[in-house]
Structures are given as C-alpha cells and as structure tokens.
Amino acid sequence: MPSSRHTSPPVRGFVRPPSMLWGLPLLIMVSCLLLWPLGVIAVRSMRSDDGFTLGRYGDVLTSSNYLESFLITSVLAIGSTVIALLLCVPAALYLERTRTRTSRAISVGLTIPLSLPGIVIGFFVILLFGTTGLFPVTADQLFGSPIGQIAYTFTGLLIGYLYFNIPRVILVVRGAVAQVSTESIDAARTLGASAAHVYARVVLPALRPAVASASALSLATAFGAFGTAATLSRGYRVVPLDIAASFTERFDPQLAATLSVLLALITTGILVGVNKLGEAKRA
Amino acid sequence: MSTATAIDDANRQGESAPVAPITTGHRDPILAVGKICAWATLIICLLPIPVVFAVSTTRSWREGFWAGGFTLDWLVQGWERISGNFSYSLQIAAIVLVLNVAIGYPAAWLLARRRFPGRQVAMAITTMPIAIPGIALALGLILSYPTLRPGGYLLVAGHLLYTAPFFIGTLTPALADGRVRDVEQVAMTLGAGAFRRWLTVTVPQTRTALLAATIMVLTLSLGEFNVSFFLFTPVEQPLPVELYSSYITNRLEIAAASTMWFLALVVPAAVVLELAGGTKVGQA
Image (cartoon, rainbow over all chains, first blue to last red; front, top):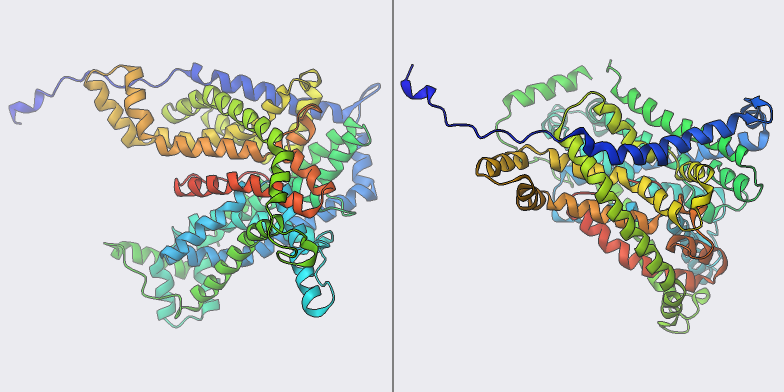
C-alpha cells in the first residue's frame, strides 16, 4: 500500500443537521390552525344537548336533498375528470414527446388556469355561455336565435369544472410521459401495432400510476370546488354550497360541520384510495 | 403489459445516448391526435382571456364586439371599484408571505436537511390543507376562534394555512439538493460561518425555488376565495370576494373590467412561475 494514502487531508468537520426546533413554529401553526379546528368540527358535528350523537350523520345520509347534492357533485366530478383525461392524456403525450418551441409555449399557456380562482372560472363560463355570452350573442347575429345559453345549467357547471381540471391533469401526466421510453412506443409501431393497440398495450399501462394520481387530484378538486359552483349555480346544489348555505343562511353550524366532515372524508379518501389503485401491483 | 415492460427493459439495456424521436407529429397517429387535443385544450384555457378584454372595452357588449365603439370607461370604473380591495388583498398577501418565510422556511430547512422518525408523517400533515376543501378549513377556523374574525386575523390565518404547503413543498427539494449542500460544505471547510454560508451560498443557489415559492404564495393569496368567503370582515373585503359580488350584481362590462385588472396581475405571474419551473396545483 502506498505510504501517501494514510495522510488524508484534515477534515474540518461537516455541516451539522439542523436542530428539531426549526420545526417548532410549523408544528404550533399546524396544531392551532389545522388539527384543533378539524377536531372542533368533528366534535360539533356529533355534539347534542345531552352528550354525544351520530344523529346528524343519519339525517344527512337519509335526506333526499343532501343525497341529491352528493349525487350532483359526484356526477360533476366524475364527468369532468373523464373528459379531462380523454383530452389531456393525448395532449400531454404530444407536448412531452415533441419538444418544439410551440409545444413548450402551449405547456406554459396551459398552466395559466392554475392561478385562477374558481369564481373567475365561473365568470369565464358566463362570458362565453351566459345570457349575453360570446356564443349566444354570436349565434343571435348569425342565425337570429341565441343558441348556447347554457352557463347556468348543468352543462355550464360541467364546463367550469372541466376548465379547472384540464391543467391539473396535463401537469401530472406530462411529468409521467417524460418517464415513458420513446423507444418502446416506436418499437411497437415498427412491429405493426395500430395506434389504438399502442395506446392500449404500451402507453396507458406505463402511464397508469400517473393517470390514477391525476384522476385523484381532479376528483378531489372537483368535490371541494366552491367558487365555480357559487358563481354558476342557480338550482343545482353541490355539497360545498350546502355547507356555505347551512352556515350563513340557516345558521346551523352543526349541520355545516357534519357536511364538512363528510366532504373532507370523501376528498381525503379519493386522494389516498385512487392513488393506491394506481400503485397496485400490475397484472 | 409484460410485452411493454420487456421492450422497455430491453431498450434501457441498449441505451447509451438519448435518441431523437424517429416519428413526427404528422406521421404518428398518436401524436396527431395528441396535437389536436393539445390545441383544443389550449384554446379552451386561453379563449376566455381575450373575451374578458373585448367585453371590458366594448361600450355595449349586448350588441356584439365593440358595439358602440372601443372604450376604456369600464376599465376606469372597474379600477375605482376594486382598487381598495386590491390594496387590501396585497397587504394580506404580503403579511402571509412574511409569515410563510418565518414559519415555513425553517420547517422546509428541517425537512430537507434531517432524517428523523416521523418525518413522513410530518410531510403528510404539512400537505393536508390541500386535500381538505377550503370551505371546511374555513368553517373549522371560524368555529374554533370566532373572536379573532373582526381584526382580519382569521383571514390571514386561513391564507397562511392554505399557502404554507406550497411554500414548503417548493423549497424543500431545492434545499435538499446535494449540489447545494456540497457547495455549503466547501464554504465551511474554507471557514465560512453558518450565517455567511446561508447568505452567500444557500440563498443564491436556491433563488429559483425562492422566486417560485414567493410568486406561488402571492398569487394563491390574491386569488383565494373558498377560505376567504367565511373569514372576511364586513369592513374590508379581499379582491375575490368583491369580484364575486360584482359577478352577481354588476353589469357584464364592469365585472369583466374588474376581472381584467386581476388577470393583468396574475397571468404574467403564472407565466414567470412556469418558466421558473415551480407550478403546483391548488384548489378551485
């Protein structure tokens, strides 16, 4: 062994890991602003005059009004997620596989809606499909009848939900496409597989975890969305609107708390469950 | 499935340098469909913005594009309506940013630089406010601390709770980066003290993430409606709450003009954010 090896340079020491105390401010904040309030909601939803009751959950889950709200919210969430997936998975593939200046510019443009609050998205739908929206006004001038006044219908809500889900699905799937090897797609094409076949056997299986987490994000966002529904809803009630109404109009914080617990369970359950589904061992 | 995996693995073994895609958008039907979808989604996402501009500069929108002529009157009226709310929202956003730096930065540092038992749980709890609907967070805050609402404290608390996950989530990977820590190590062996290492090495090395985290917090706070709806005070209303009442009550041109001012601030910020690579998703 060469003699020079044992004269290693003196080490002046390493940067020490930070003290656990650095986390203390966040711990206090999370305890006071998140965990305690969530506990308060849970307790308020189950408190009765003489102690403890699960009666409100029973009431909500057997009330045809609230069940209808949950149904409408689910249909909106699932519908907007499915349409977003159909549009965005191919779009994300194109954007990530052709790294031209155009596709880069499109990618930047598609992230803009992420910074817009739900109410502004609702207003966009009003501008395009409201009583004096772009499409009805144009149709009126061209055909003499204001076709497309759908802003305040179920379709209008669905368009609003689709709008905020598109950039979310694109962002998640784009990240995953970058991981799919271009060569396996090209190999399948060279071997004579049809486009549909390549999608079914190569692309979608490889994107499965990403599609699952994009769906989870999209569904959870749609279930919790308040601003878009508040701006567009005239008659169609979604659960977040019920929470707001039961607190501000009916002055029933216990009911608002019950609905909030159910909604938070749904969104958290979706985020955990659907992501698990994507990670599940592939057959 | 197994076929694809096999091809995938085979490719990796033979892979030496990145190979340019052989197929082009015109020949490959998958990419051809993708191209149509990409343009369709882009049009859906961006079409409303020029329409907002057109409506806010048309004298009488009901009769069509620029019917009665081009006008800046609506924009002026819109600004007069929202300027107070605008500066109030900017103040809130600035306070929320300062609190994020004070509370979130040390936490991001800890999460990035130290493995400790319960770290995964800490990360999960940190991201919880994104998973729980804003309206439920707001209800929890107002039922827990009803006396804090009048001063606007609850509004700040709600915004802080909602933005902190994004601030911490953007900074933690940057602070954990091995190259940054290597340079810090070098600075240390050269005798630089802890504060000097942080100021002259860490901060410049992580400046893109700092910029992204800052823009993220400011734009999320400026546009926050779901949490704010329960927590604002009758005295002063944040911008989105004023926009909402404008959508419900005002004529379309004024509502569009107020929205235009909001977009003028947020859209450029969103573009800078994406170019800095820091886009993350919030609630709708």
